[in-house]
Length: 252
Ligand code: PEP
Image (cartoon, rainbow, N blue to C red; front, top):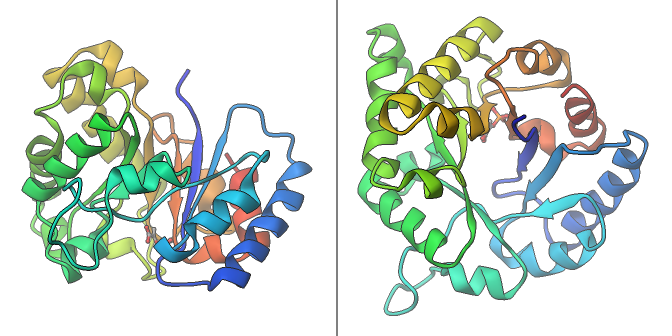
């Protein structure tokens, strides 16, 4: 059985007080759900990680980072490293979000180095990838997704690959209100699993959790999560409202 995960990416939202309050409210509202194996994750901004980790202590909520630099230390002004995150109790990092790729020129090569740095620190990656609208329109979406995975992750050994959480996020569905249909999500997730099996083994492919991201809301979560290869969601906008995020968690 694969782990089910619902992760909220807060992006550039919530100051310290708001972050703590959102976690406090979420702790209360998910209590009623009696979650067992489902992981609940939130990703506040860097400056609010420490206080969020403290607020989430002894709860089901895991606090993760939205990004990090691949170097241990050095002349990289404004950056932060894996071991700095680990030192404040953050064990998981989102990498390769489309906004990082688009606005900060994050490349597959840099992502491969970041994933290695995470593994060196015995931490965990939530790896985002997905095609642009033009890729889908030109029916290149499978090729694009395969190359993103192969360039950034396929240098890993099977054992290490198993520790990666994948988040398929078609860029045309992020923050646009346009969601991939449950069938489109399932088709891509099954394809992703098939290429992992080809590169590694069936065991590895069956072990990896693949999340869907892109305008998931309470109204569409249940149908998307019902698909056999969809193991949860990476949620942007709807993760900022306790009621919506809780409803999405409930849908898994
Ligand atoms: C995201 O930022 O990863 C995302 C999926 O955003 P939204 O849910 O707002 O589309």
